[in-house]
Length: 347
Ligand code: NAP
Ligand code: 12T
Image (cartoon, rainbow, N blue to C red; front, top):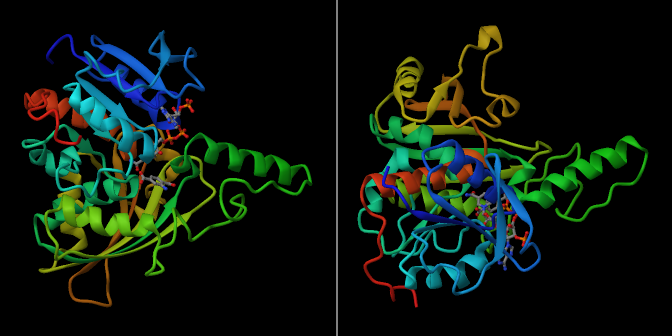
């Protein structure tokens, strides 16, 4: 890859930021200059980068001078405020928050699905929601064989999606319950330990949650097809890492379960684990710290002519966030797209 790029991780002390540093180190970026930014709270602390440590700097409007690519994962308000400063410094932003995803100026990219959308980027590229990413890595190869008309998805989402505080909330509640104590409820509206909450992000006027509507809108944008109907129910479960999804699709023409298995076995980024007689199917605990999207329980929906059911599992912090962002950076480098043409686009 092109040498001497400077790459910044914004939100470097968070659950996603740390994984971004691990992913950058593990892939082809080990020769690059890496910078780490967070809020004033952790400025001066250190984060691990391979065997080295990087000093965390406070994020300011001037942080992006000399930076080629910034990977943001410090929440939507930080992205809204600081991504425009980055672009005006000539730095390309890959943003993990939901701030820029539906902005028409910003491509929304899963490299296995729509790397071509990077071509005309304007400086900010959005990383989709974790639940959307793993679903579409598995559905796009089927859609290419016969267009998907409708998707019904229920998610089983890990607490790490809420960041470090979600992980600590589940840990603390489990410890409290095992010690006969009343658990403290701080992060979610109800206890998450030994429970399932049909509530991720905030409720909207249509009684769906924002998280559910992200899956709808992001699918249409990434697949460049407004005709795909998506109905989602997003559920938080007491799992630390990796989201699982029960997905039902209806296609224009019939795809047999056997053909679907063959198509997905060839698909980039997908691993098929589907041997029910041997109790083999994707599991959150097996997907964790893996790069792939795992698909199993592939079977025909016997209630309609052209329907399939499947179970899709992936590490939400990895492919759902850090890895996808780093793959976007790799694709930008490969396609020679690390440049900003209009520094004032977002000011
Ligand atoms: P986290 O563990 O809570 O980490 C938050 C990070 O943001 C920390 O590094 C924090 O730094 C930094 N930060 C907070 N406010 C800041 C500010 N004003 N200026 C600079 N840095 C600031 O959360 P996480 O799980 O890593 O998630 C971070 C963000 O990534 C989320 O808010 C979300 O937007 C996005 N995300 C996306 C996906 C996805 O589906 N693609 C999945 C998970 C998360 P301090 O140490 O200084 O507090
Ligand atoms: N609320 O990137 O809580 O839009 O699991 C990702 C994960 C938002 C996002 C979660 C969320 C996002 C969650």
